[in-house]
Length: 281
Image 1 (tube, one colour):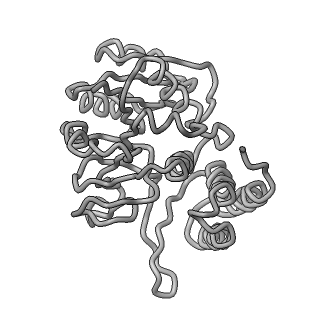
Image 2 (cartoon, rainbow, N blue to C red; image 1 turned 120 degrees about the horizontal axis):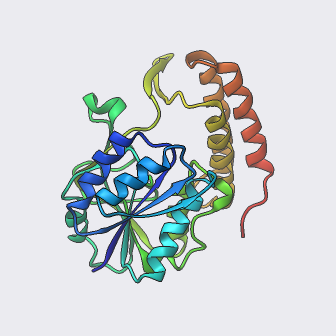
Image 3 (cartoon, helix red, strand yellow; image 1 turned 180 degrees about the vertical axis):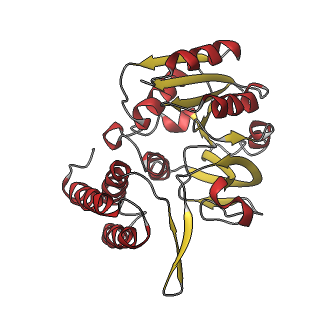
């Protein structure tokens, strides 16, 4: 079985990227870095050469979806069977690929993921998505980092949607796999240490929320893409409920986050765009 690990980079912290790659190079996989116009590209090249990773580069940031689509196209052209995707600052367990291989016998499995811990919440061992930590679980979606995707399943979809640029591109491809008849499975293995923004827990009238404190431009893409995603795959996510949730999240930002006015405005613009933009056929 031929495995490719793909990492999309954009101005990464080189020490963290080194830690990331060092945990992967000891596994049974080739590694491809796709760089999205990083200002420290020469440092990335030096690290890639040192650790014998392949690297491709574009001069400007074309988005995470573009980079992931390139990686999957490379995998198809070079006859890889599976692709492990990682964020630039995620650190995998050195046994992750071997553990995934124990579960790939069923041809209906389109993608696998694992227990993923967020550095912001590691002290309470917070799972990053739905499903039991202790059982093999069928789920509807998983994040990009740590996703182990069957290349032949990917080819039955339209691939990553580059119109989304960043945010929810992972859920988009998961829903596409489900619509194509494949399953997404989470295995009971602590396989990845991840970081999603600079999150914190807050409580509003007794109900707990997570505030990720991402930038205003990220708020735009998050609201736009989540509503767009729900409109594109209404069988998996209610467009109405998604829109209400994005509006409520914008209100919470006014209460709990910094740069709140700018984030609120960008979020509302994203909601409008998500409602009005054309759905990719």
